[in-house]
Length: 363
Image (cartoon, rainbow, N blue to C red):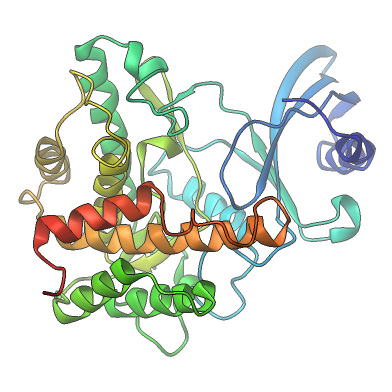
């Protein structure tokens, strides 16, 4: 997690910006930027700090997230919602106000690109542990090393965080800005968004399993689903734990007003990508997917959901995201133009497995 020369040049303007935000702080010093391995949207930097407040010397750390210069990773839910950093920070403020879910405290958002070159936001650092995907939590890390009983507790608390998220009334909490001014927030609209996004990113290539998945989703579209606040990236890897409890949930770039069933399917889809799609066995204390469905029903006070449809939708979305991210890496010169990762990856494997399981492949 070393600092680059470019990062060094950002430290002074970042210090000045933070000092203006924290008017009660004196002798603010910004340490060497630490860049952890993170996702594919905004850049994440851990920033060590030293300062004095009310005469007390404090060592601290904050998280700086800087918008990527490329177009957004996720599709645009409503006109003008194309700065993922702003979407995430705006969402965090409203989520914090709701009091329904634990978050790292938001500190400030800055749209002025003259300061760090792109819009950015800052939040408190949540010191905890994460069920990572690379390396897979099914092979190493705090969850893998925990006892079976501890694993069951950790998993249950993580699932409870998603259930709690779904208790948020999107209108009362102030999330109407996520709704398109003309098109209603239906499941069909989400399929439209993701298909249009994928067609654009394929750049005349063909992804047969995506085509199969989308066609099946359209022909089997459930009716009567209520719009809700959808986390958009609901998975164990976006939950920070401490002492088996949920310390904070993270990553709201893909937040939407959409049926909550989408989130449950996304959670189950990522379970598949951490097990069957990469050939990893399930730790003893981790519930099977059916047990996880039953747990969701128990915690949410609803019948055990049939998540197959939403797992297919999740796999379709994930396959599209991988194509988008690989395009970005090619455009940056980080991958050759003829790379085939866009078609051969765990997301595509999971989609293929679901198509086979459901007998969805055309004869």
